[in-house]
Length: 83
Image (cartoon, rainbow, N blue to C red; front, side, top):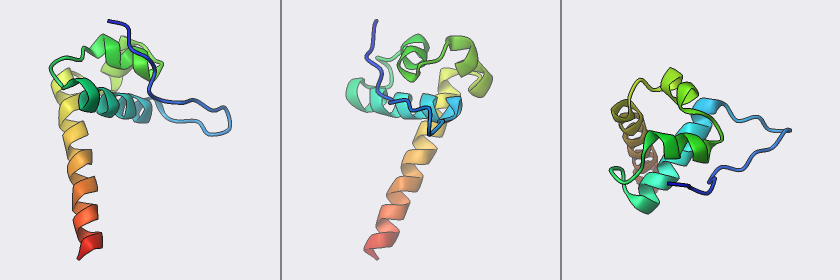
């Protein structure tokens, strides 16, 4: 499956591979669902390769867990602002 890159790149502002992977995963998981997206598609969308992705996340399950942790933090922050 070919996926359009969801992360923009800029030489002035370097984004770490881990951050690019998480951003790409978040967008793809949101648009297409967690089970529909392969590790290869996430790597391609993040502008990296599968080996780099595996250096940061040993498995897709670990990537999903980190995505969910970050999502929960964002929701908690939103609730705190509303308090």
